[in-house]
Length: 251
Image (cartoon, rainbow, N blue to C red):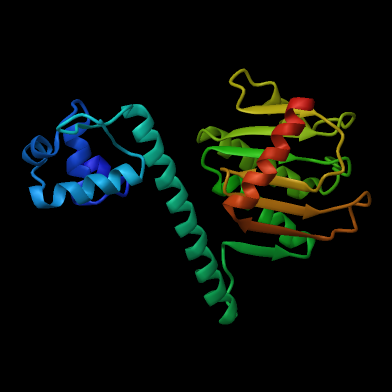
């Protein structure tokens, strides 16, 4: 597992030591021999692993170094890798977006639309870019029968997303009648497009793959379109997903 430990962010000596300890407790000299880490380096590397709460040591003489629970070790390393990756991703997105903004260029990480034409194009990003999951909150201002030209295009894009394995969970207002194609999706036996009914005034939004968010500023009059925002931000997506899950449970 040495290579896997390195891929999870550990150093070469740390990976060698964990690989040696994965099935057996060892004292420092045995650990040096089995791992191939020089004896003069063993003590400092083990102390660092203890500090990271990845290995433990006994109070016996000689002391034995051991991994208390292999599954918990892997879980901890994966969680730290995910956290580090998310921070790096957010940093690079912000950096690239700032560079493009300063040069007057568009960025796919943050897009704003203020017209009905913008709305049609940016909404398509939800369906075209989704890889695994789309969560949608459609509030009480949703008008499924208005602007049918755009909505028909979106529904065809939903069908394509479903065909490549994307799962949809959507919250619709209680009394609206579903369009024919949406109703067909909802009645499919594979549960690829699930619908629950709930009346909310919460902002119309899509959460895409737990990392992208579409927000629509709409009101009762569908002609009065405020705007649409598409942003790639895992923290915002996580917050909105928590809100969605709360609504879903209350439906």
